[in-house]
Image 1: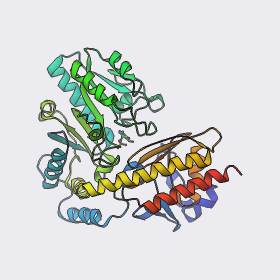
Image 2 (image 1 turned 45 degrees about the vertical axis):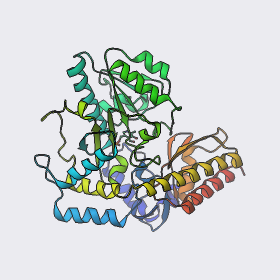
Image 3 (image 1 turned 120 degrees about the vertical axis):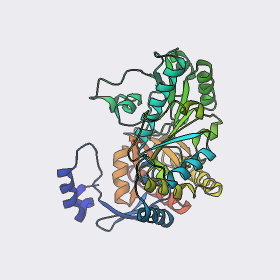
Image 4 (image 1 turned 180 degrees about the vertical axis):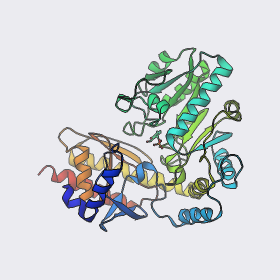
Length: 407
Ligand SMILES: Cc1ncc(COP(=O)(O)O)c(C=O)c1O
């Protein structure tokens, strides 16, 4: 897409924005103003089918009427009170999460990185108190993504995110993902926890082999290390079950959530079994905004929608999405691999295909927003309310782009 063509009347504001915003994002030159369902509209009045959903956040799409009303009602009643006191939406959301997961206790924060930061602190404190002061190491996977704070960027097993920020936090080890022998070899008496994404999202939707997570659980049980599952991207229905771990029958000790939890309102959560959570005592950890009534009311409105029929529709839509991508692979010959589970999918483009970036640019010209995890991998994480017709529209657009690139 030529910038001049796409920017239209937004161009001036984008330039003005660049003059005052930090340059830490490679932003696409689109100024988005409104949305409805799976469609967003820019400041020039052009509409786009949104297959990025704020990077796996807007599970109910944009401007969902019930979510909007829940936020407005709560804003009119009580936005924030701090954790000096209790508030009803926070208790109700914790009850909802505890009733539907392995966990007994919940800590609320504002983002995925903060939820993982809390998980790392809880695991270290638990290990030090129960296994000894030199037990603090956390093993994570290469290709993982856990956030951008100093602890979570250290936990992230991708050098590109850590470069320039050294010295990193001591006490982290990395192993290849989905390689149980490598993990077994890395666990020592100093290992406080193993921290993994059940499916690597930023790593390109990497789904482990059946049995991998079961073996990870066994290794943790044998060594006394805690199992932390980072469900920041895959939790809250994204994979077709409320939490991804349910699909493997593997129960973690700690789990983190964010992204879809508030349907777009910032909120994160760190959940744990009572036996582990007990080491967080008054003063151990805190967040000013964590679990405030506004964010929790939004999350409750999302939670109320993630019913069994809703999740069954996610699985059905996910099958349409993956089957369509596999069809594209056959018809275009420009896709090396297709991976997907629920409404989370990725394609690896063959060397002959255009780059992921050029496909994203062409898609935007055709009214479709796509996202990539690397030069050659496109990721599809639409709102969970995406329709079959919208999935087919996306597939048709990508097919046209790949076909055009061959002429
Ligand atoms: C698996 C996972 N963990 C953690 C994070 C960090 O979340 P946040 O950007 O909300 O801090 C992300 C963000 O992409 C993620 O995908």
